[in-house]
Image (tube, rainbow, N blue to C red):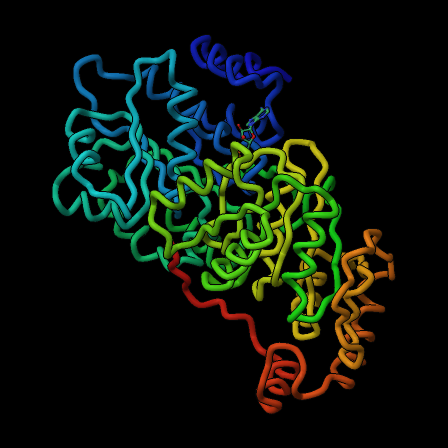
Length: 443
Ligand code: AMP
């Protein structure tokens, strides 16, 4: 299959060639012809599948074919949850439209709106936006959505996770009823299906990969380690493996900051990226990481979602996410575009339940390996000098791991690890906490 056979015009083919793409990805093969026919699309696709080009190329073609030569109302609105993702999509739109007479811009919060307003006033055909800033500027009458023909909701599942459902519904009120809608989501919960029903009209279902399956090329490993030794383990893995581009996920913003600081102190250049960081700091960290001046990017789930970092060889889950779908998103950062990658999860005794939930979702057992010197058994004192061993020891699957983890719980002293209080420790290790699926607004 070639891009030409998908019916794309020569200006777009030229831009695609300049990007160096030779063949369309599966999602592009499926989505582009359907979108060009003017149909609504419900697409199941993760970041890394080439979905951005999958919707951007056909919408640019539709707009350029039906353009009013004198007048430039917003014809396509691409709504996306995070600033980074918005900036990336905008970069793509600009690159793919470089040989067309199409103007585009991006708007998101965290920066002053003045220049965004000025650009909007000068007229744009394609607008990429995060919901909050879009509604703000709409209220200020800095933009009108009355002429939107194409509405694209990207990362819809993440939008719902972040509590954007009301904002989305408000945006829809400002759109004309007659329009083409494209909804992209990595997962399909009941909520997404409900949202899709309210937006899409007789959609064509397009799937890039089966729901909630992880990229085949990704090797997934669990390293069992006491919580208090995770930083030492990360440091050792990165140093011994001489890894130069590592994305590490932490559960909290503070955790991300702390880990980045500790790695920097060990001469492993690292930056944290999360919702409390200014837009400038986030952009700088991402740029440094992409240009290899920063070796490690420590991120929270929401900040990392959708980051376009091609061919990332290593992803580390410093802590496992309590929402199993987030694990799938996280490890989707590696092994992209046909390249192999490694996703490592550092799992302490408290996280056994998360492993079980992830395995249930994936319908697959995760391989457990042990790094010598990082014994989970708490009765053994952590050795001071244990960085000499490089080779991980393979110990089987997590089923065995579970029983070892149970032993770990039984043997664990109330006062070991990071917890000072025996009772809170017990609470943590034994509790059957339900994943918190409430709205998360980080960006
Ligand atoms: P996305 O899933 O849209 O975030 O795209 C993931 C990465 O794949 C981006 O770096 C794109 O530039 C790249 N990409 C998109 N389409 C293709 C293609 N047909 N061939 C090779 N790379 C592509």
